[in-house]
Image (cartoon, rainbow, N blue to C red):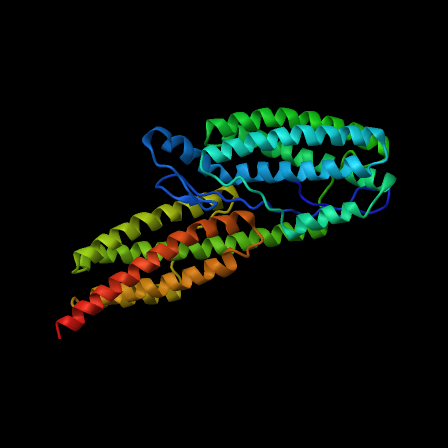
Length: 366
């Protein structure tokens, strides 16, 4: 249950809410890959199930991170809450979410996904803010946040229970939704008892929260467009190389590039669709210039021009993914970019080796 952090205040109203991002990603199905630094198994017996779980890794990561946050907040409430009902609620949160964390961790681990969770700076700040409260002020802020978070998580788990690729994820999300509904009902009751806001989950979002979400949406849109346009150019260049390259090695490299970048293009397109972003990848002026350069290359010089252009573009993509991708405020962008970065670095290394071979042959023929 993803806790989206809250600004606590020692007043009788609930605290305004800001977003906490889980460190998760959502690569697509297909070829062997790594996630969380682990190489995924490729045996025929388990490949399909594990591929489906990898497709749902964003949600699995949210469930894991949310449970960790719930447990930490629950333990904090066990020590700081003044109302017995709040303490009893916190006890249940620690018990239930520890069990849920173990369930999601087991599912992630057996499918080769990362099970470690690191809270980000914003999450730690929210915990620190609650630690600064005590007595009734703490009770109101904690319970108001529990209402909001469980309402958001209920919607998420119900949706994933129907739409997740993995049957195991769907089943675990469905059973989790039942538990979250129970938590939400109880949270509303206790929040009413301590003077919190039991209806905080259905209140309109603040202007600041709305602006933050809009900013993240624009950031997601911009990065997805940029990534998709680069993938489209790589595929077009590879198609040219498969027809015109003289070297068999360059042709084989180009075929692999076309296949791999096509698959990554699908992953970014899928991310856009899941966020209701409709777009059509298209080459910009700089992309057009690079494609035109390769198209105009002579027969004798085509392989070198193609590889030079690929290396140039991959260097740019690697730099962009290392900076804008890894530092993105959007967890889906950050984690998918980080996942693809390893692939881009491998492709760049392969392209450079092909360059070196061509250069060595050219020197030897002089």
